[in-house]
Image (tube, rainbow, N blue to C red; front, side):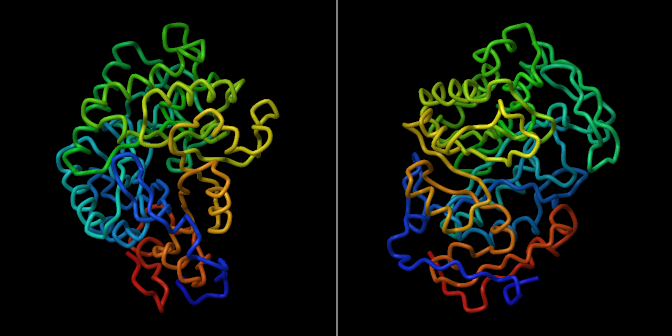
Length: 383
């Protein structure tokens, strides 16, 4: 593992001076030094007993502060909303203080950092929430076995209106803590089959009240979260993440184009910080759910006024191409950011990229596979 491996690849640009991915960008009220974004990735290195971010996580995020923007791993907003052992959470004062150390370290490196807030909904293992029943928009269980517990996913409880109101307040409290931790903004995780996504898509939302049925009703919960936290973070510092064709956690919608057209066009009125859009492969995606033509161009048509971050497993060349197309303003990197903590510097200097990524060390554990991927041996500083 490291820089000098047989799996290194050279991804040269002929003229890095004219590559916008390396240029600063005004992103709402904040200016970022380049258009590389560290994608939100849950790595499971916090204390699994209390979700408090630790010094190992501080080192991980500090290493990657060469990226203009960092989005944290999914931070659960309550003790009953977490699907991952070892995730850094954001519902106690102690967790906030752990994040604050990380935020301050990232800021010293002239990078910006966003807290991703999430509730896992029906994807929450009962074992992680003291044996309680997880909440969901409808009482529909995820088929199959949970990879972490090696047990079937639990049968969730359909949320009452009181449950929904309580969850909105939990998002508000989490936003308050994120504000105290000096985060530059917050992201609402509305993808990957977690609670907000479960409300959006009609494969998991079978409600017959004001939160179900029509597209407008299914989007209501997300819009209420934005409105609930707006007194703490203005909309210009609130972002969302969506995965329109993602099948993870058994998600689907009968008409994803209509759903996300309505959602994105509605979100334009909120003047959000940005929308991050993750494209998933079409494995097991029914034809009716597939997006015809250029995936990101489709969503840019619906979201013309705001900033878009594209996430699609890009290499630097493909990332620059989508920026040149105008269909995205930034690009978020996941795997390449794990094995190349200095990815922007490597691209700027045409240094080889390390693609030797050990997925066996991706989740949980210690520094191996987390903070031991070195910067390029001849690295020059990048501001």
